[in-house]
Length: 301
Image (cartoon, rainbow, N blue to C red; front, top):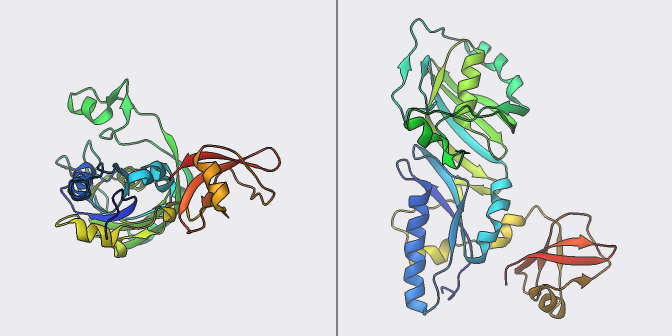
């Protein structure tokens, strides 16, 4: 059964050639169909973590009030499998633009590649690709680059939790990595190749997980309909499974729904806490104030 105002998380497996916005639009069409059938207003929808058109894999779509959790999903560590071609370069750092072959490019050994990985672990400085959606003076960097006005983007701190070689047979190198938000995998391949004295372009990218949401549990947006949507929609609470939790009684739930503070002594020490109602539904995110108060900062009722 489809609720009149659905909310929750939909885990898509975005195919290559489809933009993240295209995938969201397909979900939006289903939501409009549900709205017509139930007489309710179509639920809002948004995605957490853009994938480039050449990339495939996990795209978390937030539906209804769960769109207020997009930031939480984006903060989750992400796992990727990236494929790179060594001895080539392009302005986009991938095959979106035709790569240029480097003459007499060195062919690093597997051992040399393994030895070059450790400096890329932990918190590192990474310069984003010029062909990225970062805004410079109100315009996207890739729009400026396509107009022949490529900006100089400042390095930023990103975090690489894990990095390993899956397969290497020159010129193709496949890496598996787990990283924090804001990491550009194609920039990582570019910088790793530079350390090896060569260049590289990313030829394929699969996002295999965002936090607890894995590619094994994702669904193809092709052919998505109301029935499949209802079967696949996950509880919004999964987006905040890493937060401390409190359970509230109905009177307390009513206070939170109206934006009022709660007076309680069992206070977890955290900036954000997930509050659940008596039915086990995510009710609100709260923060602590004073010695024994909870203040609602985001409601989902």
